[in-house]
Amino acid sequence: MEKPTYILSQEHKSILKIADALIKECKLLESGKKLDKDFFVKAIDFIKNYADKFHHAKEEEILFAELNKNSESLHCNPVQQMIYEHDLGRKFVKALEKGLNKNNKLEIIKNANAYAQLIQEHIFKEDNILFNLADNSLSPQIQESILKKFKQAEIKNFKKGTKEKYLSLAKEFENR
Figure 1 (cartoon, one colour):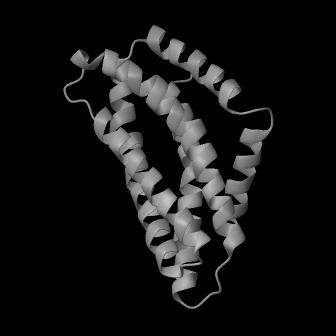
Figure 2 (cartoon, rainbow, N blue to C red):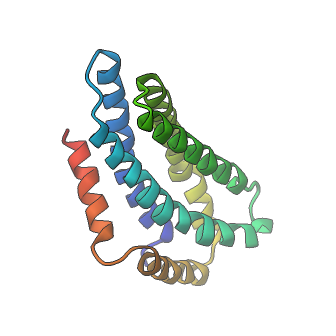
């Protein structure tokens, strides 16, 4: 059986491509490159829709909810910290968007770098700590239930072709 954490970890790969592209673009901006608004508009769209509405929604509403239900079997429960980091990421993206609307390169660089660094560290924690905890503490029946809920969430949150659009964008950003 494919584990829910495997699916989330695969989605992390696309999110990390965007984070890497943000860091690279910020370095170019710092060395004098002209602001590429289209790049940041696409990155923000990806983050808001794929990373947050699609991916984080599955984590927060499904996986984290199950971990909280079964928290007595965990020696520690890092879910609150993960949710805090999701919220912090949303704040950075909102500030990035504000900076973009004002053509403020410094705000764009500051918030894009902050988001990218946060999400890289966050994904490391999930992939290497939280997901192992989930795999070891959730029964196969609960994991099967989570997988079904993931499929329902994908259908609910993304119309046909939307997921592919964002995966294609991540590939495009990886090859920039």
